[in-house]
Length: 163
Image: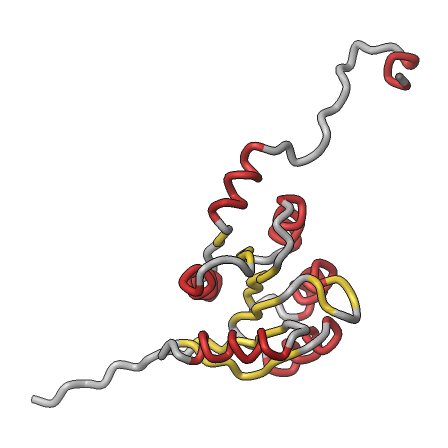
């Protein structure tokens, strides 16, 4: 009796970062995994949007700080135009406010560039499966910091609020 070959699913990825050496390193890291395939790269925010819209990858690995516009704004645009593409933010921005906004706008994962290679791979796999991934250290900070400044108590006078 012959064995039936199992189909392997390849997760297509677009890498968007303004540094060519970072893109090359990410391509090497991701392409080394049998189930991941980098199909295109982008070096600025408008190119990232165009590339994702043209190639419709399963996952976009997106740097937040690139020429041509905010990566955070790109997330909202891409959610509207290519909702099937999961977005993994890979950034040096370790402020919880960036992570909170990226996730609220539709990114599924937020990874710091200082993280280990395995963390990025885990985030890409999670996002491709529709799961959320957040850098553990950043997640701990988000859990302890308020999402927005606390509101003043309701029983204050107008003058007390002004002060």
